[in-house]
Image 1 (spheres, rainbow, N blue to C red):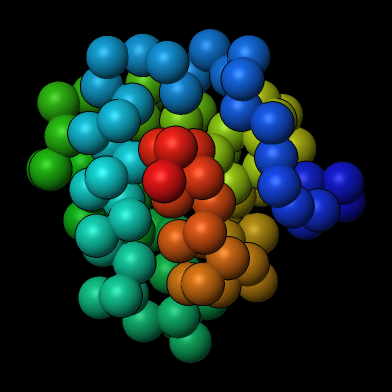
Image 2 (tube, rainbow, N blue to C red):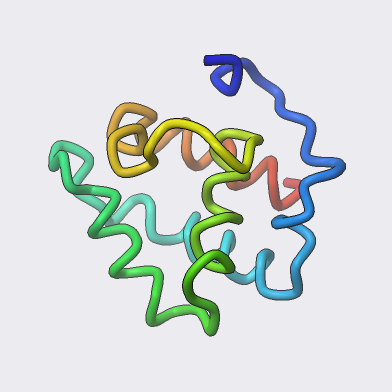
Length: 100
């Protein structure tokens, strides 16, 4: 799982360059502390909480999250991976994708 290595290169990450991606990732980052990371369904709760805060849906919602977390457009199912990554890892990746 090469995506676990830090830092990732987001330079050519098209999904992170969409107009809504910065807002989406900022909202995603803000949600992380409020999630129950002991719940195996934390990803579902994350997406459910994120959807009403942004104007995008479908791939425009899911792909920036995937690319920010893994650096790739394809890979392991995020529903299974997200709880394993944890809050700190997700926060670091969202911050990196935002350029912070």
